[in-house]
Image (cartoon, rainbow, N blue to C red; front, side):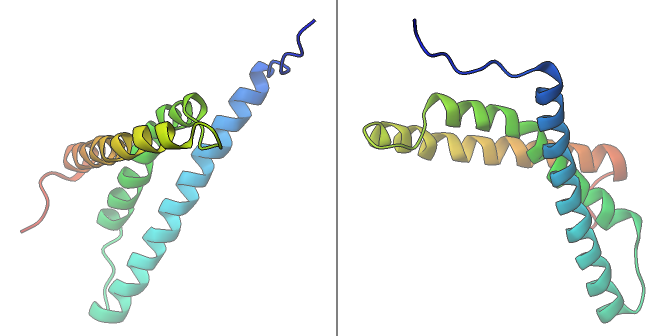
Length: 118
């Protein structure tokens, strides 16, 4: 009889993705806070909406590409014996995920706030 890994329960999968979503949200809010501090320091005013939308669009675009990235990592793990092939695949996949995330972020920003300023 083969030892098979235990199958995860549906609520465990839901919990995993909820935690990933919350982590991306926390990162976006941290970066938004940094934007607010910089604005207050340099201009003595704070534009509340634009930094929040920009940072959340950016992190949520990465949230969207996280599942395919994790699938790629599971399919081509960075481990001894498979390292050369896996690294080669990851090197070509990384720019694709970066471009996809950037495109999603720009689209979300423009749909929410219109074109980038000036």
